[in-house]
Image 1 (cartoon, rainbow, N blue to C red):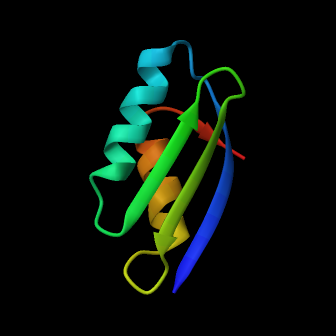
Image 2 (image 1 turned 60 degrees about the vertical axis):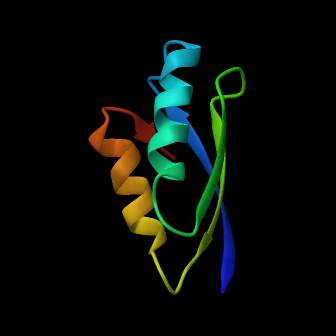
Image 3 (image 1 turned 180 degrees about the vertical axis):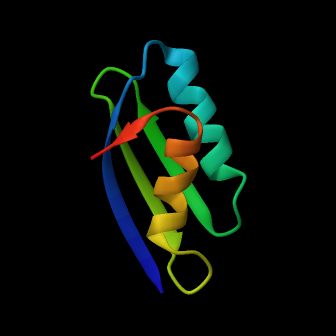
Length: 68
C-alpha cells in the first residue's frame, strides 16, 4: 500500500546534501523521494508493505542529518 511521508530535515548545508539524501532514498525498492534544500523538506512516497517509515528515517539519520 502506498504511503506518503513528509519530513523536515535538519543539518542540510547545501544542495549536494539534498541530492545525497534523495539518491540514497530513491535507491531503495518501492521508494520515490523528492528533497528540497531550500525548504529543508522531503516528500517520500513508498510501499509500506515493502519498507517501514522508520527505516527511511533511520537512513536519513545515518547520513548525519536530523529528522522531524
